[in-house]
Each structure stands twice: as C-alpha cells, then as structure tokens.
Length: 290
Image (cartoon, rainbow, N blue to C red; front, side, top):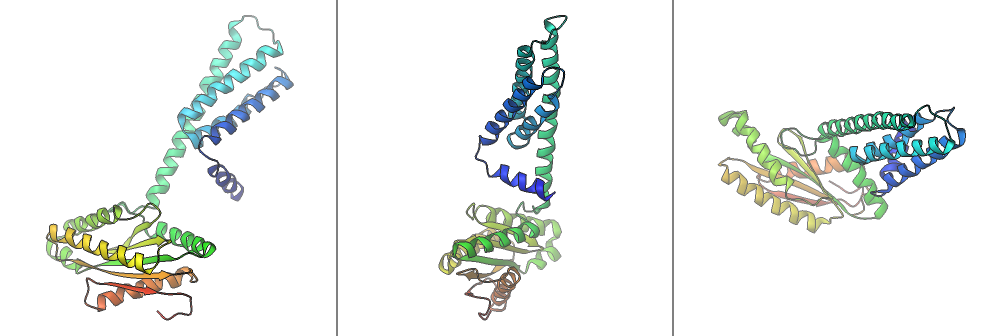
C-alpha cells in the first residue's frame, strides 16, 4: 500500500499534460514489445496499464484517447509482423474489439476515481456548512506547521465561537440554528484566500489557518471577519455574536497540540472579556506563556 501511495504521489507531481505524454510513451513501448514478440504471444493486456493511468489522472477523454492509440499500436504491430488472416477484415475487427474493451476499462477506471474522490471529499467536509471538517483541519494544520518550520515563516491560527448561539436553538428551534451556522459558513467561505483553511470543528465552533501571516495581518483578518459576521447576524435578526481567539507563531516552533490549546485559550479569553471580542496573542516558542 505504501508503494502505491508513493507511486500516486509521484504521478501527482507531474505537470498537467505530462501524465498523458507518459501514457502515450507507455503505449509505444508496449507496441514495440508487441512487434518484437510476434503475433503468437499476445501482450494486449499490458496496454491496459497506460490506458488506466491516463483515465485515472486525466479523466475519461484521455483514457478513451489512449484506448484508441493502443488499438492503433496493436494493429500496426500485427500488420508489420505479417500475420496471415483468412480475411483482411479480421485484424480490423480484432482492433475494434480491443478498442471496445480498452474503452470500457478506461470508463470504469474514471468513474471509480471520481467516486473515490467524492467520497474522500465528503469525509473531509462539514455537511451543513460545506467547510472543511475537524479531520481536514487537523491535516491542514499539521501540513502548514511543517511547511512554516521549513520556510521559517509565520503561521496564524484562530478559533471562532458563537456567543449565545444556544438561545437561538432554544427559542427558534434547531432549524433556525442551522440557518445561523450555514450563514457563518457562507461568510467564512468567501472571506479567505485559497491558501487559507477554514473549518467547522463542531457545534458552533469554527477555526481558520492563515499561512505566511503575522500578528498584524491575522488581527486585521479576524477583526474584519467579526464585523462581517455581525452584519449577517443583524440582517438575520439573530441575537448572537462571535468571539475570536487568534494566535500567531512567528517561527512555528510549537507542536500541533500546543497550537490548538493556545488558540482555544485565546478564544475563551475573548469570551471572558465580554464576548463579541477578538483576542490576539503571539507565541514565539513552546516555552512562551499562553
């Protein structure tokens, strides 16, 4: 399994269009082998490897295109080998049958890949808000911390908790509470860069990651976000607000658990300060006080 993951990771690093070129080269190599071994030994099965690779990484169009190229390659090798047939239409028929088989395999591989990708996406997405879930956020935090350490760059992390959200569920019902959460998700979803990670951790608790962002930038983002959320709450006539705790690690010299704990402390400090507040902290190392 680790070998397959390594191969997959290697293919994912290939630039767009490179996979198709490698697949074409694979078909050509199998075609050469097909010609060298002669018509008595069939190597048709090996054409499926580049066809499947093209379909997996490039989609059904690339897969079917490679299926056609594989059949042309087989047909050329068969004709050059001088294999006698009782009727000249037989090799054409055989090539057509092979194309159908390769095309079906390419289609099935592409469908399976899309289903797997959707399933993985669902496992990493909060179904109510469409944001990343806790699992996806944890993976992103581990990745961003490691990257920040390697680059020596800053990383900011924030926890956001809704104030008095329970009152909405108790007085207006959980359906109205879900509307509040979806609205928060919409505001968060349009307020960040592509490089940032925004997640719903559960209940009325959210979090966001800001790579390459220092304390001033993080505080500015959090303050602007709090204002946009407050406007959305007023528009929806919801008696809620939000408390945000922001922590910045200038050199990311902190463990993942300590980073999360620091953000959690900052958020609760904001709540104790009267709710509807943004509290920012800078932690330069694991030995810094919270």
